[in-house]
Amino acid sequence: MAGISFMQPNPGPDTPCPICREPRPGSPRYPDHVCADCVRRAVNQNGHALRFENAGPFGGLVAVVIDTNERTHDQGCTIDGVRCRAEEARFGGIVVRPC
Image 1 (cartoon, rainbow, N blue to C red):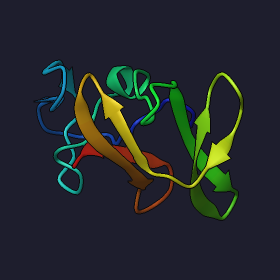
Image 2 (spheres, rainbow, N blue to C red):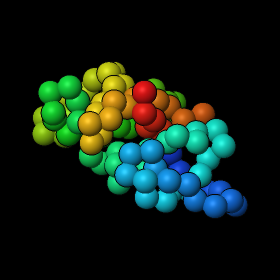
Image 3 (cartoon, one colour):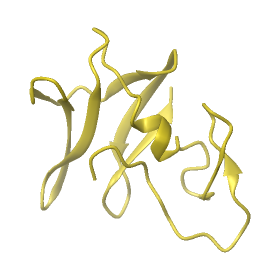
Image 4 (cartoon, rainbow, N blue to C red):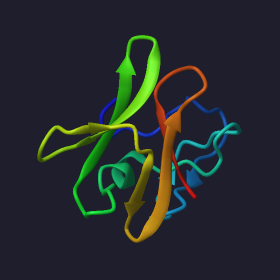
């Protein structure tokens, strides 16, 4: 799920991403989730690009520094100047939301 935000099929209309305002599938459980394009721009406190992924087949969350492949359990990131937090989605995958 690297670089992917939570995506859930939604019978209703798309809603705007809280960062870029582009439409993305709405979610009643995660109404403020960040779109996948914005998640791809996530950086850590040192400005290094990140990707988020499950730690293993049974869940867990890790952030991976793309340049070094360093793995950390720090869930915080910044996207276009907005502080965000990655977390495990209820039934798997990763969801990124503004703090």
